[in-house]
Amino acid sequence: MERIPILKMGAALLVTIQVDMHDRLAMALEEDLTAKIAGNASKGVLIDISALEIVDSFIGRMLDNIAAVSRMLDAETVVVGMRPAVAITLVELGLALTGVKTALNVERGMALIQRRIDADVVDRGELDDRSAE
Amino acid sequence: MANQTDVTLFKVLGGQEHAILTDWQNLLKAGGALQTGRIKEAELDTQCKTFLSQLRASVGTDGGVDKSGNSYSSLRSMLGDISRSRAVQGFSPTETAGFVFSLKQPLFNAINKSSDDAATKAASIWYTSLLLDELGLYTIDVFAKTREEIIARQTREISELSTPVVKLWDGILALPVIGTLDSERTQTIMENLLQAIVDQGAEIAIIDITGVPTVDTLTAQHLLKTIAAARLMGADCVISGIRPQIAQTMVHLGVELNVVSKANLADAFALALARVNKTVVSVKALSRVQKNGPAE
Amino acid sequence: MTVVRSEVVQILTGDDVVRVRQDVRARAVEAGFSLVDQTKIVTAASELARNTLDYGGGGTVLIERVDVGGRKAVRLTFEDQGPGIADIEKALTDGYTTGGGLGLGLGGAKRLANEFSIASNLGQGTRVSITRWK
Image 1 (cartoon, chains in turn cyan, yellow, orange):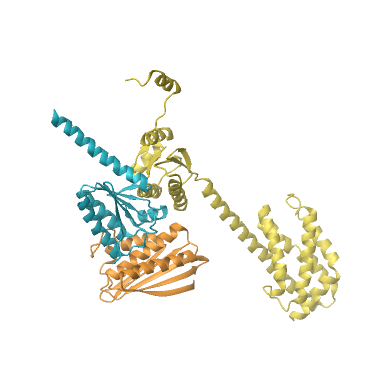
Image 2: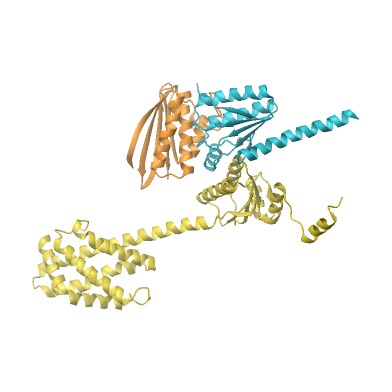
């Protein structure tokens, strides 16, 4: 069965969806991502949907689920590159994806995740300093 | 019989063309066709002449009072052109149709003179009357259609003109909305804004509604949808310029604009600058900092 | 109203849902829909096709390019011989679902279309029709 490739970029995972997804493919992606986040101890997941011409409630739910699962595994999900027509339709459909972070493109999404990773490091750094005293 | 009336009209148009033309032109001018100055005398004369000769050609080949047939197609297209130009020039429908209807009197006079047989004359006049009625109504049809096209074009232009998306700074867009927001306009606005966000890679957009006179429940919903769509694409929206009475109405309507809202565009811009890590400082303060280094 | 072109597509597997989306997109492009309008009708088609598959146990969709009073439109009619819907009002409510979905399918499709009609008989099946014009 065909699968959507998941790339590892430092502490983040990058998924670029380029095909018109049928439902089985979406469910496989959800499972694969969950396994990879846990396996790599990833801090962030970038899902690039700039090639997607539609997002219906099924794919919307998949994005919501991935975000919820990754949050539990201490990773942040950022959906990037949603097209204007898709965004308008999703809102009309009644799907706000409130649990999902968004960014205009991969670069901005990566910056978002990097900020979070940096914040984590700073926090730990302060902890270390304090414990050394 | 249809053929015979045709012959009478055809003969009259051929034999008395000059007299009819002069009569008609005088009648049109007496009726004030040239008074408004929207059309020149020479142009009107040419239109009259062309119409008469086309009419003659059409009547000559026509079999009955069927004006939708092929023989009338060139006459109709000529009339269509006249009506369209009249509509664009700002003539009223009465003035436009009057061009054709005013031909009745000269034609009837000519038919009267042409024969002694009352029955032939009556039949010919009846036929001519039907013919001119139909052609006159056709001019109205074309006139109305042209006006509709003009209105549709203007509506389009207005909706495009009134929704410019302006760039305030790198990554900061503003959308000054002026006038009432109905659902069609909101859709145009929404699409323009979201496309501009993609094109310019904007992180934050300010929707300024200082120029919106009223906001009802539907408009508020449209605004919220635009903001939700922008968020899905990864951009934030700030609303600015909500008038006090609008704010009050919305609260009374139970509409909660659960978004960042600033009193005016300047405040919203300051917020947007902060969001993209920029600030505005006075030149004096800047030069002091450059000279002495940042104050600690 | 005149039908310019029509075709029937079977909805029996998940791949058929993808095919319905592609066919509807092609008709919407033919009708001269804007990108947003194309996306709306294709998304609505996707929702209804999945309903037909998941709740109706499979069925068909009639995809038509029609002209309504001079306006170009796309009309979709989904039919299945499934269990039917007991309470249509409730089924149209956002968040109501019997199948573990988000419950946005019917209500969402209704909002994305200009015209919407639904008829259902318990034990005999469901028929949903939507039209969107340019």
